[in-house]
Amino acid sequence: MEPRRADEAVPEEDERTRKERLKDFAQDKTPKKLKNPTNFQVRFRTGFVYIVVSVVCVLASEWTTLALLVAMAGITAGEFYYMLRQDAKLPNEMLGIIAAMLYPVSVFFLGLDGALYVSLALLLALIVWYVFWMRARVPDVGVSFFGAAYCGMLLSGIIVVREALPAPWGGVLVLGILLSVWANDSFAYLVGSKFGKHKLAPRTSPKKSWEGFFAGLAGSAVFWCLMTLVPGVTMSIPQAILFGLASGLMGVLGDLAESRIKRNSGFKDSGTIMPGHGGLLDRCDSLFLVAVTSAILLVAGGCIPY
Image (cartoon, rainbow, N blue to C red):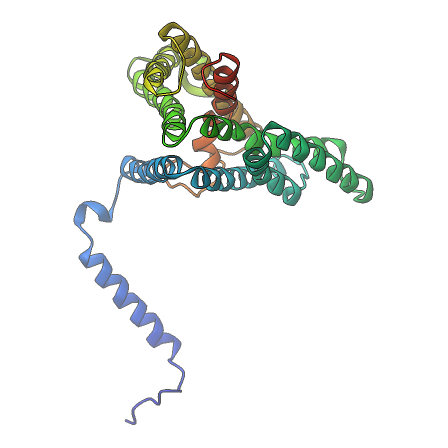
């Protein structure tokens, strides 16, 4: 049998066999406990990667924080519009996603005026789209604008907080806000799953309980109290507790709002980008309202310069 020439195509069957051998080899080398991970293991690994990336980007610099927020805004806006399309809406995804990503950029360079400029530009572009695309309806314009503001403008509150203090304390303060959100979610889940008996919003999110709700608020308040230790932050403990409770309340409201969107659209998860969690929107739903609420409370309360 003559050897195959270098320029001769590899038969499809041989190629498939080679791939199977490589797959078997990789499977043999994989530790046994990793071959068939449980749902908790998958959820933990995905959550760990998300937390590490978020912490590194937030602490590294203002530029990496901006890059993180732009990516989050774009991905979550895409998931939002995908769900609304299944709910018989026809949003302009291109304009909405671009605007969502421009919100953090505009606030980074132009301050709060930048968010106003993006909003006006988006509204004008959507009006032009509505006039010249006959299939578009007024609700489609509203959904397109809401998606960009929901996923982009609200997140821009993180930029305001990050730029208020010099490095590295601006990043540390933002990390404190993120930790308060994660503590709210974790405390609510742990206490609610073990002791929860009274449903918080049975029609919107059946698994949430009042017991978990109050535990989540307590977890949020704890990390807001720790934020009083950040140099440059002028905030008393009673003020921190009050702000922590308000922030935790906004986190729960944001979570319930996204649950309502999914329920109306017939979705269990907003996407599949985060195995074990669903979509990125599922993971960030609490952060949207917390980001803008934290910025307003810290600035209006005189806790950080602006």
